[in-house]
Length: 307
Image 1 (cartoon, rainbow, N blue to C red):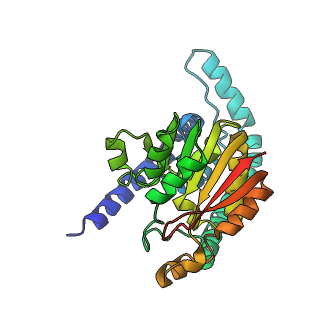
Image 2 (image 1 turned 120 degrees about the horizontal axis):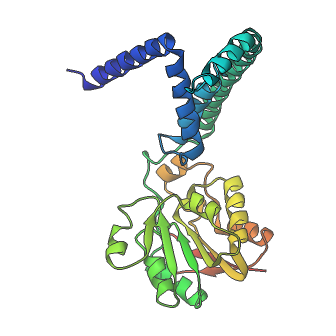
């Protein structure tokens, strides 16, 4: 009648049986730890689950130091190694028991700090509100046309986030390689069908992974309206890093003072006005111009030419 409860019970039974086998066979437990350490070395981030929980779980597993060193299977060598292990076991065990006690406390403290940090994020409104409100509206045709005029030779260009691809299409008609990144794979679907190079992914993470001086033009829109001031400044520092000297950074963001009541409440403390974007972009090292646009939401496009 309750599939979730049934699955949880079966998982608990499997884990209990596995723990019993570990205690009965120290060699099995040692091999399991060896496999875990090998997995840590080769697994990509997030491969086995949500990154934060995955790392904490690995910390739990790797915190225990094992003194049961392998002795191998070769005749003679196995007996010698076994004798050495028995002779040193009492000393190593005495040392590792103290280290294991310390690491156990440190891992528990790390988990407690993680819980408290999550509580702080919830209290100050840094947790995700994506389930409560739609993503910020993407630039319309007027903004896309204005950007195409303001950046006639965009060169290597990325649009973060791209939405349906109107800006990508406008810039792509004037220059070559224009790529768009957006969190929502469904939102980019129509643009992909039209032949635009739109990709699903986290815009902020994508920017941090770009190499230095790899872009001629960077357009920031959509997700930037959900950043606090400190996040906006960090974003522009990364933008300045990846855009070559003489390149362009453009920001398309609505003014928070013009938000509806619902949006103002749910995005309180997030998003800054175009004038503030211009100020920060100038501080980051760009000659900035604010261009008015005939668009009901995005009335100003901030364009900075990297010096």
